[in-house]
Length: 82
Image (cartoon, rainbow, N blue to C red; front, side):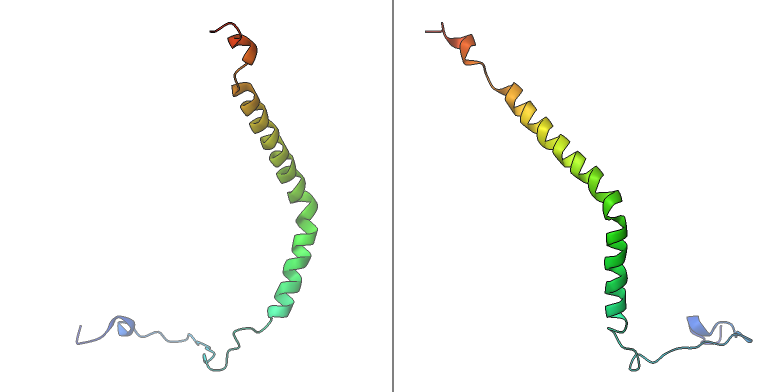
């Protein structure tokens, strides 16, 4: 290989790479616009997402309460045990 490293194995021509220096990048550029878009999308999907989750939560609460109620012993079954 003649001492070439991995990135230098083949020469590529006709391709132009554009890069922005890390010192020129702004890490929080567009954060305000992105947060506005996020809130807008959440509002648009609220009525599609919330009802199924609410119904599932209420169903699970009812099922757990019913399960615990059915697991309790009936005191009348043990009145004559002395």
